[in-house]
Amino acid sequence: MTKLISWLTLSLCLCVLTGCEWTAGSGVDSWDDSGNWVDFSGSYKASDGNVLVRQFGAGTAPVTNTASDELLATGDGSTTAFNGQTGYTPVRGSLTIFTIGGYRFTDTAGTTADTVSLTVTPADGTTGTFNYSTRAWALNFPAPLASGTQILATYQYAIVTPIQGNHGNAIYSFIVYQTGNKLQITDSNGAMYEGTMGTVRTTGGLPIDAKDPDVILPTTGPVIAQFSATGVSQGYNVTLVGVLQGTLSTATTLTSRSMKATFVEAAGNEADVSAVAN
Picture 1 (spheres, rainbow, N blue to C red):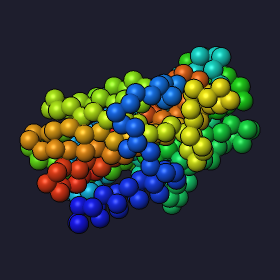
Picture 2: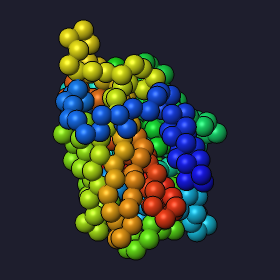
Picture 3: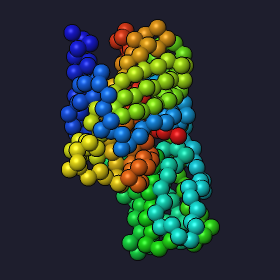
Picture 4: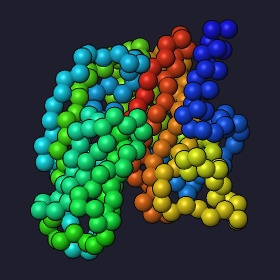
């Protein structure tokens, strides 16, 4: 009964997180290519480079460091839109992105949203956003930056040494291979988990079925897919359940990919997974 309640609670939390119904558990034995318009394949690791499967909320006291003049991108004389990821997750309220001799972008302290709009100086129509879950930043300028103009970031970031959340050797990465709705996930110890994705949708939107001739596939913006996978890790049966997220920069290019999941061992142990793709 305890395990059943745990599973129901986990499913409810994921539904609240994504704002949609759970679908990954249906039709798990059948292959479906309706999700082939996005590809979540890649190597996923914790943003701090430490253990990936970790105890919920457990770790050492944070140590604050400063990233100074971290190079994010360089203008080429023709590009007006830039995006990427910071090296670490900034402490809220500390992020400043700037161009040499030009623009200054700052985040909004105290907000609880994952994605925040950056305050821009000078206010000439230039916009900027930052996502605290994925470390993804995006800047749009009304005119191209001159060739050689550097985009730099300065911010504080907190390092918390996490506590391993699984039995056996620690897990530091997941290699995800997606084909259609099928997923194959291999961890850093060589254990393999196989499963499926549920529906793929834009955040807050309806499910997107690429096989439906009436569906117009998005070319920009965030997408999200629920997933579940099972395998055996160091003698323990494991279920991995959560969501994969990313941002379309073109119709076929998925950037800023991330994974948020729960690692559930058959013995009743549950651990947190929060990863970004390299």
